[in-house]
Image (cartoon, rainbow, N blue to C red; front, side):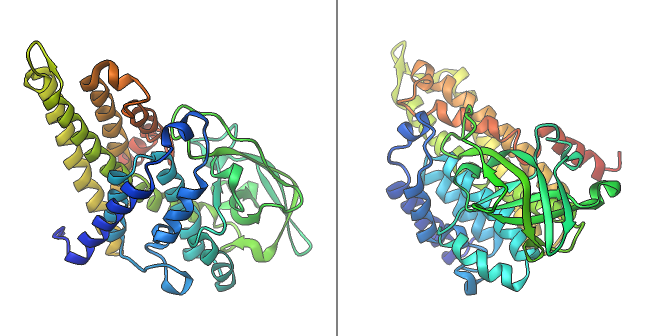
Length: 381
């Protein structure tokens, strides 16, 4: 593994930092308070090329390799402060666009990828249900074959981007007797008869990333809108989750670096008992731990991205990166609040928001406990 970045890659990152500092920092406190989706900032990201980074040029992408893509995400996380926006963008890229690129027909790719990449439409990914979260394959949503397609019935919950989605990738049982080998994936456009989206789900953090439910009531989906072959939905889902777990937290590396720099600066300038608080070991030790977490998480993410970039399997590494990065971002966010004291607890200082956003990372794309189970399974136990 060689993580000696080229001048071009570093230029990508610097451009991303500058863009985020200039375009992605305004209005976040208010948007977070009222759980408002920042459509304008989303569109700016699309115009900057974020949504198309690793995708083919013929669909409006940049064909960047995965390491460069992660470096840009890191830059966006460092330069910007809207974790919810970057989470929504990553959710679309890895759980909607990537499956279409990997498993879609040429017609599906040509129809949907250009509009997703340019921000003309927004995508959502629905698999979790009210009674099946971590046990995703115990879903109740059904897809019964009919003349020309399928009739879908059921519901999905905790769907990122659902309240604003134009296109949803939905998983349903086509052969319940086969269990996980009887699931298929479908691309459903908002406005399809029998398909509806609920109002947003209020939540603790990532509040600029809308979340809601998908309701399916005798929703007819034509056969040409099935993604991939029938009954390979579990394979599509596992593939997208490997990519999502490997990539969705890339921006958090940049956020952790920004968080550390902010905390160091505060520790140098804030004085108590006639000296900077950084001189107290309880503060300096927290800063040291934040630095160690940042660098170890960065290396684990880079290794995972490198393996995927080389076309090598990285299921266990992706689970390790997802588990570790989400846990250390949470730990460092709490340390940042403690270092800032009472000010860190206020919305004005924008320190507490990272903490609320970080906690979501130990839950989405498979909880930390599920990641531990995946790692243990690959260890042979």
